[in-house]
Image (cartoon, rainbow, N blue to C red; front, side, top):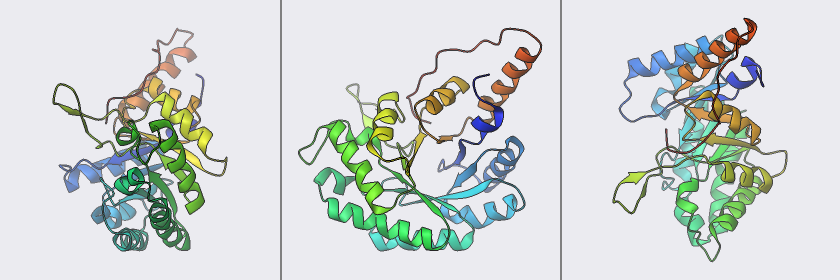
Length: 263
């Protein structure tokens, strides 16, 4: 295998964010995260305290979302959400930037808000992933092309103190020509762009559209250190299947990795 189990499992932030998830399902998700040895769970703010209880004594970190999923909360609300989540046991914060402000070119506002969240989190020993929602930036804005807008936003995130830049929420639905809404999430081109737009101090997280082992491997090849996934079980079961086949001297089948298509 190209990477060890620990290297790939250690990239996964197990996503427990769907609005219909019950408490029981989220508890089961935390136990699954421990069983598979992933990096973290990413949960809704109200569930942080319970997740911290369930994960106590394990190596799995507790992550919480802030301003999720659309980023439109006022800065003080995002700061307080961060404070509350950290008090309840979160050590990683996935915040959604104010996308409308970015598209308006109000970079001072965007940087100040991200800095407020980063300062609060860092003061409490937590790290911050800033979600830029790439699906909404394709057409560009603020006089910039989509490429340049994403690049500028990543650079603003770094200037504000972000520890990661992250592609998507998984809920950035864009209306297509057929009238249906869909999200693409992480793409190879965006991951490459994001990695090139920030220094080595800032990591990159892919989210949305990574549903299989080959997709996870591709994400790592693109330079991302974390990946949001809800298909954790099937991804890591497939790793174990292929590793067992290789150990037995058999050819383990794997496809060409691809990304895109939402959670």
